[in-house]
Image (cartoon, rainbow, N blue to C red; front, top):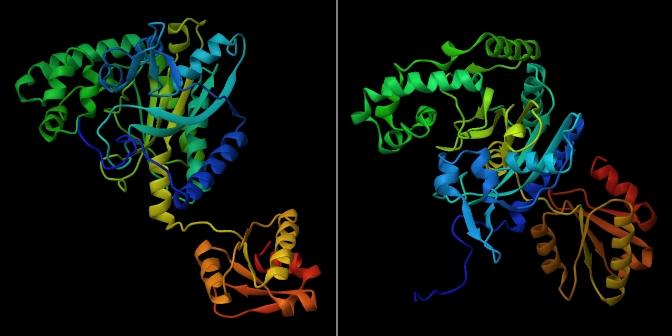
Length: 423
């Protein structure tokens, strides 16, 4: 047995340390506020599901089901899987609890997903997604709402907007027709396709359109376009979406090779992509899946949704906004036993007023405590010593600028700090 120098996290499953989590907290808050602003309600879903759920929804021939899922038998012999995505679980929950029966639902969720992939920046074996599902609307206006919502999300995060790509896969019949055309075309070049594309040729040929192999992409340049196979309803639906996006001033690129890697998609599919994250450029992706509810045992109902990769968003926020660790509003420096007692009471008073406070605990001189105050990320240090106690006052020392230190009566310290913090 190989000796290990120390226990470590499983490859591709990462710890999020305190100097990272503040960005996640900001992101989660903005996600919650944005989803709520559009009338979406949170649903919380289990991490484990029956394997059959994903085989039936995602597709047994997809890479996710055939190669990437964490699947095992439990003690009763039931095959269970750590969820690789959220839409199937959300639909299962909606059917099980009657959420879709003669109802329309706007739902959102957030949590970890699991896929056995080669770890790299923006792609991990445990990764976090926020998902939105809109069930019960057949028209292109709900597809447009999902895209408009994501556009608002980028603005809320202060990000330069990723680029939007859209496509239509048409109906299942349209998709089947295109599949035959694509297989016929690519079959002429089978000896020149990359290994994965050759394997997919007879299992999931539309995924070949996503190939990153340069030679395969050259071959695909002459392939038929799925947009040429759209029937009237799907074409009008796609044109309706484009009209809504034009009206809202949202730019987009029509990408006829955009297919998504899940079998349940039909008609509209879309991705928001960036060139700032290397190979993993897709930040948000989704589309319409009108047949999935019926496929999983419910009554036929139209649906659409998307998922956002949180690790990729966090990377964008860090890269574009140069985010710095968040600290408390104030750090209380206490010199002497009486000052420590007074500082403890002052901290509670400030917290009651809505300020965030970090208290120095233990011994330490002024210089040492101010170093700790600066390291905490606080905007201000509050100094308490014998002189301040005698004056019933506190010294407010700015930590991010060179001057501005002032002596403030204890009764006025909340007002003074709120003014300094621009609140």
